Image (cartoon, rainbow, N blue to C red):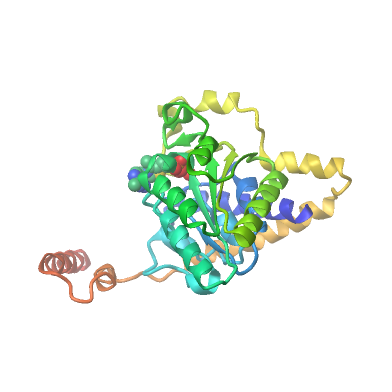
Length: 325
Ligand SMILES: Cc1ncc(C[n+]2csc(CCOP(=O)(O)OP(=O)(O)O)c2C)c(N)n1
């Protein structure tokens, strides 16, 4: 329980630093996770070391719990990476997926492989409620159910798809879609880290032992903009935040620890010290990143680039040359 607290504080400080780095021009864009710490820390702690995570683009906290050095993840946000910043096989974390819901069929395919090979490995896929309007979401749930594969679909329902509020995205409860696919659906308080942990642990056990997929809907709130490019004053965000009654996940867990007599000033110190180390590493990683040649983006897509790509590459090389001169 104390570990959950430390991890949530570390994740929040990392997130704040990433936003600050973007504001200073060190990152191009960043999608904050503020408010979603309990969803990510609780669920990721429920996995075994061999299990795999299939993230979207907003889950550094979960990846941190799974053992990834998330300072390096920021190369994605700086544009100083080619082919991924980590080795998915070593870290058991699939690449970020920005095309919404595309990670869900990936997770199902992986889970099918795990089942066929009898590896007992579970795939946990994160996505937002907005992504559940994509065909990939429905296809993934259906095939996971029909083929009975060890996958957990973890939806962080943060109430927003950029500027579109939940009530303009769907009418029924997202979790009830599980009924249509004949799989268990669990709605959980996404700002209660213990609830997120327990729901995911049960789902992961069901996946591992019975090859039964689960849809988890964690109710939470995006405590800030969609990304550093988003301006929440242009839509009805502030009032919705004021009306949100779910609280801040870190404050809630702090209160819980106090009631359970597990609270101490040492814990706060431990969390802040761990956060300071990670934040410094993130800063160093970003600021000291070496530039990559523009041509690199052309080198890693085609073995034999088609003529129009060759033309683009030459044009880009010419632009780079003229900028230099
Ligand atoms: C296939 C696809 N369509 C549109 C977009 C543009 N887009 C990026 S994020 C986003 C909203 C996603 O909302 P949600 O799935 O709830 O996740 P959240 O960003 O709130 O975590 C949209 C429409 C995209 N990335 N991919």
